[in-house]
Length: 290
Image: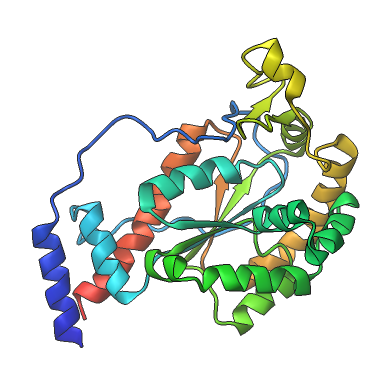
């Protein structure tokens, strides 16, 4: 097995041409790009990110993906308070690393829109700013993670787990990330981002009344606001978030890294890119040395 994996590594490295360099960032479609803000008053003690290995730094990204996939696809969790920028960064991560983006929030909102029994129950909790019970969410997330595309390409789990019990449910199912990224943003900026957020139901594009206003009055007249994007509800969501986030740190302490989320989108992604590339390098080394 080891010899066949090593041979595959050699073939991948030889046959795949290096990726073309570019100075352009892939745009995050349907997401808001917010300016930076003052440093957060909240601080979580997390270990620093590891450095990329010299042994695999020069290997083309496409070759790394092939080689790493022989061992195990990249598995990433990204966490943060509401409006911390998870969605924007997920679009950039998905575009660059080819991971399957799985958002528990999107799964829940799809159930609510469909009017399913799970959706009706979930909406009651969400309107109160409370976490949706684990039994409703865990099965939806598990089923999505086990689908072939996520198993073959790797996954990017967005905003989940949100509590210790949810994390333990995933641990029981042997679902664990290679790296967990925590975006840290000041509360006052989070509230401002949420309250000004609007959705165009026709195009699906997300606007912000201050940072990314609609192009004309016609679009402005049809914008809608999510039922939980009010100041009252976001403060409840933040309170719930902080009640649960500390308990998650012990579960993922060995793979958890904090990233300042109040910098520019480009700077935040640059740090995340460095972290994920380092994880990919480690997977490549494991297989290449097998």
